[in-house]
Length: 491
Ligand SMILES: Nc1ncnc2c1ncn2[C@@H]1O[C@H](COP(=O)(O)OP(=O)(O)O)[C@@H](O)[C@H]1O
Ligand SMILES: [Mg+2]
Image (tube, rainbow, N blue to C red; front, side, top):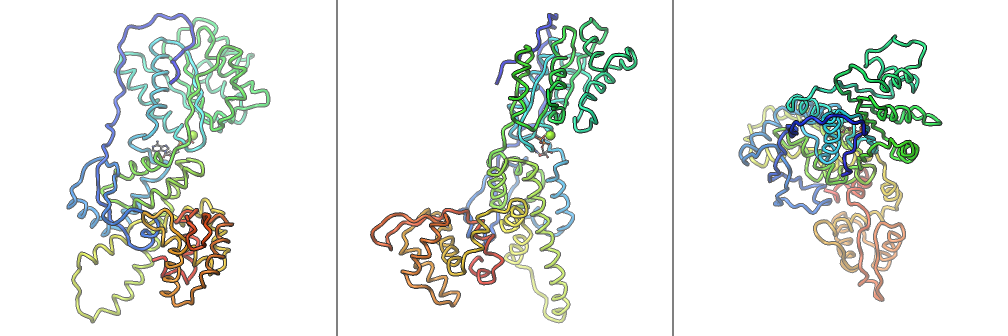
């Protein structure tokens, strides 16, 4: 954490104590036993039906309560799906911002120091899109105002601007001037000049100002003059504003900070790094833990987190992908409801059935966002070249790949070619097709090895060569699920 440095206008320091910002308590992780669907999931993960999956949740629930909640989930399908989608909407403010505690504290402490010492200062926040910058800044704004009230400081006046809304880059100075309520004093001077004059003389303004300039990238001009002038305003002797500039471009700092440094007004830089897989998973779990029912299979959420982290770490994307997976479940439920309505009419005269636990389990698992929904949703966003490669393989090689996936499902990491051949012949027999001989099988494996889909080790004897799967099992399932031959194999 960089040391907090504010611009050095000599000011009297108020001897008031810091008050820690009041934060919602961090929800403690608790263990829930989650139901598993036996089909695709068994192919794709190493979590078994008896595994206990640790997911964070706001409150602990007994198993019986869980069952009741899940029953309720089944009963009210569409309304509950609407609530889930709302929870996952990017514009729904989460009750807690997970995984950004350090960045939030850094910015908050900086602002507090400025308010306490009545000194201007600037921060430069950067990071890729969807890394929680705007969300965190909004939170900091609220925390700072609460803190100021509780600690007995004058609440700073806050101006939040989104730089994309300006027609001309220099409009930001007009906006700041208007905020200072000084429009019309010196009409001949430009707004920038007026601000420079204002902050060069003692003024009667009491409160500090917090200026949050989001999407700062839009103020880049060829000579970067607007950005320089903006940050320079915080260095003037009677400047009273805390400037927080937020930008998506991570190289913007390299382009304009050196000159600010040479002018002795280099802002502190806080970088929001792309979210990792674990962070994305935690954020999704925390948002969903506010619901009294589990909607996603844990493996489905994990797949989403893994893919989004590998692509860009953009939380906005992760949320959209999850919402679209919910929509797929919704469509599936609608389709099956209309089918079952027809069959109910047909069966109207037949005897009444009692609902057994296994009926319930089947129904409930049907009402869960599964890994296949997620894989489909992900593929709409990021189509993987691996999927294309698998889909363009001849059917016999696809069968070899599918049997490798089945063979490796669970804990096995690698095997020998002889063993894999046994799995392959098993699949061929159960699908009533003639398996290739070992020599041909081993040649097909060599082709898959060349395509980077599996890895074959070295051995003088072919049957003893070690084999490892080099592609994601979810990619194989996704690539093959549309092919009729694999419908049973993938179950
Ligand atoms: N740490 C987080 N916890 C909960 N939701 C988050 C978090 N980070 C991002 N989000 C979600 O992702 C969306 C995009 O985040 P945002 O702050 O707008 O990103 P940025 O400004 O970096 O582009 C937010 O609206 C929020 O819904
Ligand atoms: Mg933003």
